[in-house]
Image (tube, rainbow, N blue to C red):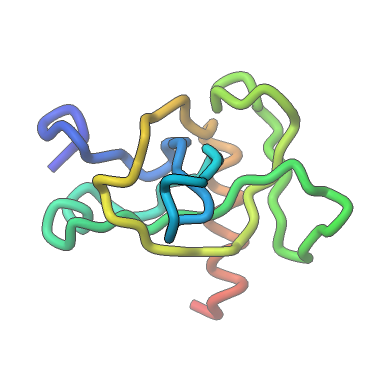
Length: 118
């Protein structure tokens, strides 16, 4: 199953906009996040597994992945993917804004594997 076959599904590597904080959408602010889960997982669970995207380099985590190709992401400023992983109901995703380059996807994948010990 692919995102093009089913509306509301997002390919892994897609940058989306989500409300933060997630609990109180009425006072939330839009924030970017990276889709990690497959379309099949999203379709069967109704949830999307995501990683945080931030510009907060001053509070860097050792596993942060600086994005080398910001142009394709839809982000306006240099950012990092942080291995702060969370699950969100698909209905709360606002919209896709871009996607990671192949090189950035590979580096994020390696970082997540390292953090999880897989």
